[in-house]
Each structure stands twice: as structure tokens, then as C-alpha cells.
Length: 149
Image (cartoon, rainbow, N blue to C red; front, top):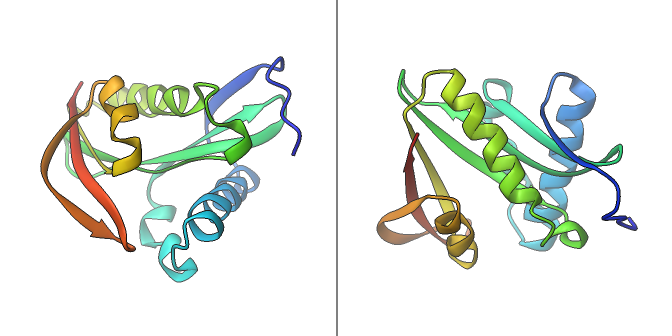
């Protein structure tokens, strides 16, 4: 895909099966094809229960993330993915902000996420704090991070 950064970037909450399928396609590209995650582990039972966000450049899907409600006041952000050629355009930050806004509207006060170590600074720059030890998930180093809304 040829990216035209001059086009508008929009991030929205997914409201159709087509958009949900676009999210799966982006995650497959980033996690399965780029990072070697087992395709049988990438799609899970949470996908039908959580809130998905999708980022678009013009009408082209380029990024995604999801929000899983864990309790009345706590939720987890996950499956954050932006296509390689669209990184460094602040798309990840916009996806995070959309999911955080949605969490706030759900009266969530605490967000957690499992950050891959190489993007820890990205999350820290967006107000998340690392807690706990580094752990492996799909043979990729991660750290638990939290943010109070």
C-alpha cells in the first residue's frame, strides 16, 4: 500500500463486520507475518466481546487496537497494531486516545496493557507506567503497564 500522509487520518470505534475483518487483517499482517505469532493464538475469545478501534488513512484501514472490560472499573487495551508503512504518523497514539476515551465513557478508571519492550517508550510517552517484571508472550518480551484515567 502506498501511504499518502496528506490524507486525513481518522480513528473510530468499529461498528461493522467489514471493519472488524479489516482489524483482523491488520493484526495478521503485524503480529503473524511480521512478528511470527502463532495464527491460532492471534484471534481469541475476547474478539467477539471487546470494543475494537480502527484507524484509516482516507478510506484505507491502517491500524487497530481493542479494549476488554475486566471489571466495573478496569479494562485492558491490547492488539495495538499499525501497518509498517504507516508507523511514525502518530496513528498508534490516536488509537490509544480513542480507546481511552471509550473506556472513560464506560466509567473505567484503570487501564492495563502488555507492552512489547521495543514500544515501552511509546506507552510511557502516552502516560502509562511499567509495573512488574518482563515476561514472554509468544516468545516476545513484554511488560505490564498501567494508566489511571
